[in-house]
Length: 337
Image 1 (cartoon, one colour):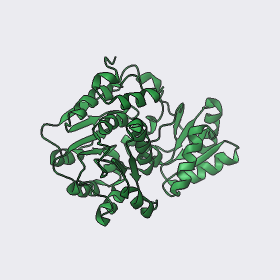
Image 2: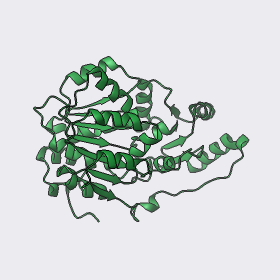
Image 3: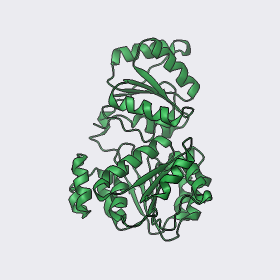
Image 4: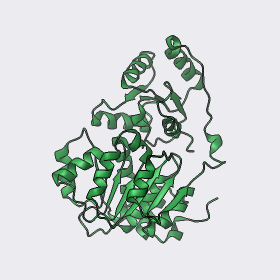
């Protein structure tokens, strides 16, 4: 049971008002552990389950420490996917709204020119995927000499997606004197390299166990199926379960397209999400899914990170994920009541 309210952290009254308007009244366990350390500008390693409130845990301190008068970015947040970049940007803007904090999201498959224009304006906090952040650094369109905080969000997924070298190159551009916070649902051994090379020896570690009260919220079950009858049994499952909102995960975009076509022809209110789609189309699909216009979404693991959907009742692993960590991130989309 958390003992604190957000007021006890001593953050700006405008941030407290914004949190109240967002209906954030009590910090989650990870927020209670991380926020005081982050406000003291400590380096922190945080291992915490998906959906535990990590974005707000670093978002509040970043908004608190940002100086409105400074036009250059003061914090850089690296994330593995475009969806997560947009989600984190939205959360930061919501928390810092009354303090007029401006967050800018940059990612691939979106106009570099438009992002360049946004970065020329006041941007207190920049959120982005490693590849596009590196492009802006090399072009000189992202200036980082005032960055005093670096956040590596979903660090395990950035490693899984092969971004480690890009992350290290980005870090080499940043001021040596800075705060570094690393957040991850799992801690594979490769993360030790980042920790030992780029974080303070006096860093704090926060490891949050899945709380007993949260565990029953997610019921895990499996069904043995034959490959040739897989789609038919999926239809049967969805008919029986009748979910309010459901994400169906597949390992490749070709399987996503195939399952989407089958379920669409069966008359389900459904759409798809994968990395081969244009960004505008992906944003439109997510808006429709969040609003309830769609009950079903077929997706690759690109959708497993940074997609917060209220009242998501079911997650179906049509394919068993390639990486065990991805099972954690997929199923973490639900059970957030």
